[in-house]
Length: 591
DNA sequence: GCCGTTTTCGGCCCGACTGTTTTCAGTCG
Image (cartoon, rainbow, N blue to C red; front, side, top):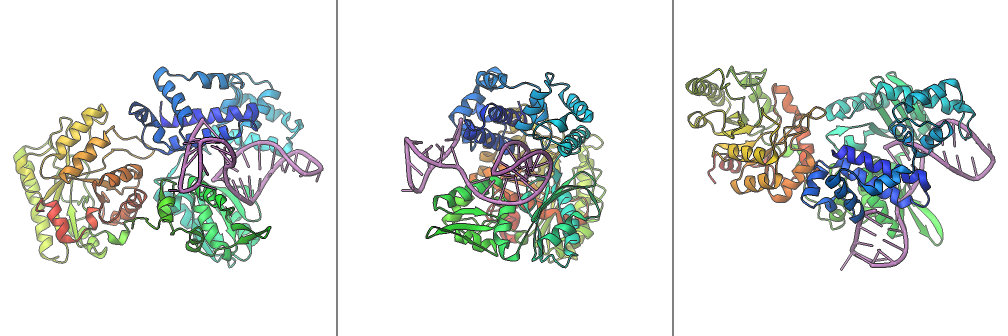
């Protein structure tokens, strides 16, 4: 059972409790939802945690839910869950997957119209809505009947569940809207918020915040967006629209003097905000997007903040970088004024996963730009060093001698460019396949031509975890192999990575000073942030690379840096933020 | 059901918006 499925199951249990007796089970419902959130978010499979007896390490998973999940993994079902679910008509559950349907609405409709078949309930409901019978129901009306019909239709089209966007795509949508918003004279400042500002690897909705003296004018302007499909809601300070393409944009507008609490509120994460508010509550304070509510001599006073720094300061803590606002310890550290200095884009001194168009007759894809062009771009970026790492010449079509000769030719070209570019040190690498056996795709003689090798998996992804871990470690254990590229092999929205025993790989990488790559390619972002965090805690070296196949793609570095920041990485962790001499000593094993 | 340098018991974030109401329930983030 996947984390997604387990999370869905826990939400189903929460919904069932809400239907049975929401008041009585109020906090249980919250607890189940919280556990569902945690399991949905984590990149570690709950089943693996169960095997290692570490389920309780998930926040919000306590003794009871842990026991239920253990039973689930052991026997495939949970007696307690079955008892709870038995009391709710099964036709309720499919409706819960439709946006705007909660437990109450779903249960009422299923009960009144006596829907019994979960397989047909959505169609049955659509028919009833079309016949006009819902409008007569108490608590419903013509409008809600039409809303139900539209929600069902959108659900059938898969429109509202069109998946999460990769970062640059969401960025582009946000920038377009921000540009449009700034055209209004009533807009003072406009910002991207939510998971976009926290730089999560994927984005659901685009959240925007605007400061203005004229809230209603901004909302009016927002809903008049030319690429709008429809308005979901529109109030005095917030609004949501669907744009063509089906993506949702949410906006919140407040006065400039509330900018601090507004940005803090709308950046999230939800877990981060809840933790902050619980903390404030202990002082008798109440936090919201409007500021901090305090009681003075029996009177409630709202204190306002125009910057986030002031808002956090009022809570006796340092400003927290958005990338780590996930309630994974950042609040405690900010209270102790002990947040780590996260790596920044300007700290990066070189890019090492670069594919030029040099005709090396590779096993996989070739780049599109010349070595010289890419060197020029690196210099423009202010890099002091860089490395070329085209894929190795294909082993199927070449003899060992041919591979050697091709590599040598590529090296000659690099040396030629190096001669006329003294301000940047250019290293000679290759991205070399780790074959299923764990052997590298090129022999020792060809390897000797390289300063170092980036090694990676490009075939036979489905291997048992132990075998895959052995394969990787065997490949990495060659002295020239210094970097493991895209370590999980995942492609966002396409495939989950292969299975690796991270503890074992971290231990090996640390003791042999091998770097794990944070691949900045937006559909990779591999290592994922959560694994970066674990690597950082273990003291494993990391390198941020773009995997560029054109010179312009070297701009993608920012996305890799975001992942590193989300993983709490500092300069000490990131080898390509080191000065040239330190870096060179490391890469060439001269330390 | 979870959780803890103010607690192992007694708390549990906060508010916006909509539709159907005439003061509020439901859903969402």
